[in-house]
Structure formats: C-alpha cells, structure tokens
Image (cartoon, rainbow, N blue to C red; front, side, top):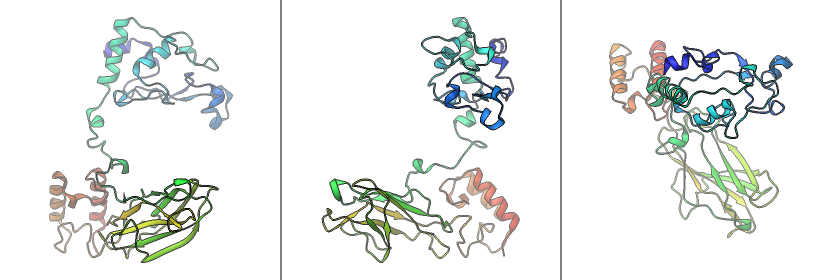
Length: 331
C-alpha cells in the first residue's frame, strides 16, 4: 500500500509523514464565488478559493471528506478527482495538477484506498485513548446535569414552551443560563426556582425572577434567556428546580409552563468548594508524595476521586489539573 501510494499522484500534495504539504490550493470542490477562501485573508486574487491541504492521517475515522464535508465516502473522493460518476471539480482557478482526471487501475485504486483508510489510522485516536482522549460532550452524558424533567403546559395554539438547559452548573460558573423557546412571542415570563421537588408539574415559587419580556412576535415564536450565576455560596450536590412561567391568556390558568430543569451544582477547579484542597487529594492535611500515589491509583482505576475538573470523566485534563494544583500547594 505504501509503495503504491508513494508512486501515485496523491503523494504530490499529501506528503509523508503528516500526509499534507500544508500548502494552500484550489481543489474545485466549491465554486470560488461562494467562498473565496484564503484570498479574503491575503488579499491575493491568485489565492481565491484556496484552502490548506488537509492531512490524510486518521481519515479512516471520518464520515465526511474535503474541507466542505461535502463528500460522504472515500469512493466519492476518488470519483471527484477522476471526474467520474457525476463528480467533477469547478474549473475557476483550479489547481493545475487536478485539471485533468487523476485515474488509477482498479487494483491500484483499491490498494491506495485501503492504505489511506487503515495504515494511516491511529487506533488511539479511534478509541479516544490517551493522549487523544477528551471530555464527554453534553449530548453524550449518561445522566445530564441539568436534566429536563416532567412535561410543561401548553398555551396559545397548543404550543408548550421548551426548556433549554445545557450549561454545566459548576460552582463558580457565573455564566450559567437557561433558555425558553416556542413560547408566546412578546409575552412576559418569569423563572420559578425552588429546592423543593415539583408538585403537579409546577415548581414552587420560592424564588421568582422576572418579568422577562420574550423575543418574537406570535405563538410559538417567543424565546428568551436567563443568566443565573452559580456563585461560590452554592452547595455541592444540592439540587434546585427551575421552570419558565409565561403569561398566556390561552393557557389553562393564564400561564403556560415549560418542562422543569433539575440542576445540581457541583465542585470544579474554578469553584471554591471548601474546605477541600485539591492537591491534598487523600485529605490527610498535608501535600506530599502520598497525594501523588493516591491520585495515580484513583486515576488508574477511573475512580471519581481522580475527576479533578468535575466533568464526570477521568481523563488527561484531570492529570493536568492535579499537577497544577500540586505545584501550587495548599494554603
């Protein structure tokens, strides 16, 4: 595979060891007038439509190709450069190396495809293992926090206001926010907040923030946002419930309600969760080698104690967080 690839035209631009020459070129995958690419940065008309050459490394993990993501399979890519099966580059300012079709024998094409999609794929990237691990996305959470629970109550034209709650409620997050959508446009809204579990689909109004005038003009078009800082006085693990209440004359009692957000503030490296010192991970009152040993043991077992940044995942970022905390020591 490597020998066949190295003798191919692909190797002119996708050069080992990183399988790109890092140069800018026009591959014609999109009309120049739709996106002038580097020309809008450099001011050079010669570079209109030019983009940096992508690397082929880990291409086997992808389900979209080219800088636009417009091609869905590796077969589409080879069809594009061969000008076949309805695929053909747009001609304006096209790189001279791909003006003519780039074609291979069927055998060589399969060998090159196999080489690109397998030999250049690092299994650590595929499996998201160190050093290519990452925090989980909110959409990947087993137990979202905030979690949207229970159903809301509808208002005008049957629209039920939607609760938007996706910001992590870590202590010290002054930008924590919730939103509402699909409500009555232009209506006044409040957010009910309570530490008591909801009853009958309603959150007790222990704290009522508002009124907030919603954006939008008509039924189902109302939307708005409330910023609710999770300051350092919040208690780790203490759950609060939040619900949008919208004045709507068509609702059963004159108020449409969103589903309820269950929010559980948690400690993180940006929040002061007294009295714990992050570096003193074993809690013996001193920072020393025993804390390093304790952390490494917890990290190896993927235990919650090693989740230094409090995002629910034990990964490289926790190593970095612990090293920084250890270096800083404790007061």
